[in-house]
Image 1 (cartoon, one colour):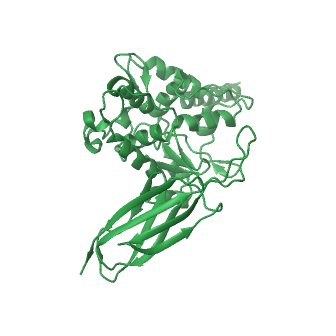
Image 2 (image 1 turned 90 degrees about the vertical axis):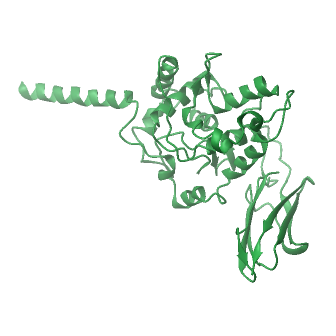
Image 3 (image 1 turned 135 degrees about the vertical axis):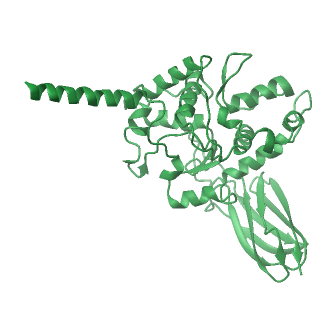
Length: 106
Length: 260
């Protein structure tokens, strides 16, 4: 699974920063049929976690109402320089992860 | 008598104009499809993070640097940094291949490179891998004007593409020109008909919830007019692609575009 993470290039300690992640995923709803009339099994990213230097700061539980290639945005307070680590899993059990480096000054 | 002759002359002039418009290589109007899109879609395309097509560009970048095939070479192994080596390349496609004499679009060139230089299996048309690499290569030309050249080597392909563009077909008996030139800018139910330029491909289309090639989009048009769908990568679509590239000459590459 391909994903893209966006964090500010530079942040000052105490700043409220926006963190964005986009993941390529079909987010199959479980309500659609293929061309042969067979029901397509539900397959969505059901859980996504973001850890900031090991501490969980964001968690999302998604269902069939989220469009394909989900794009999420949340806010956090810049504390220390370090790593944002995203992990997610879909209904088939396929896991994905992505890391982003955050530089905090001051 | 003179009145009749005058009317006849006007008719002739009008017919002349229509023929000129239909045969014209570059119409006077040239607006990218994004200009016909809603503000929401334009914003989505303009922001590199909101643009979901960038996910395929990212995939392409990874593939560019990954070794593959019998030779174990990667794209970067020969072409080095795509940001400089692939800049402007997409503006020249589809291109007449000197060795095989075939008309190649970007997808076909990537697959040819895979087979001949990497010794790898060609990617399937519309696979995430082929779309990713195509999007990544075309993305390096973003902002540059399309610059396909028609000369003796590819004129026959071009003329056949132009004939396809002007040919009525399907149960709806419509040609490309009927919508995308004679009715461009007008409404087709909820849609505004664009001029049908291919300067943003591969595009992320909200209807597809995915990125797709120009050939997929052309096949959608064929489906819409209820005509027989040509195969992906077929001569008919390649020649049409060449004509469209010439028709869109000067328009800036937008890859990856976002459309409804």
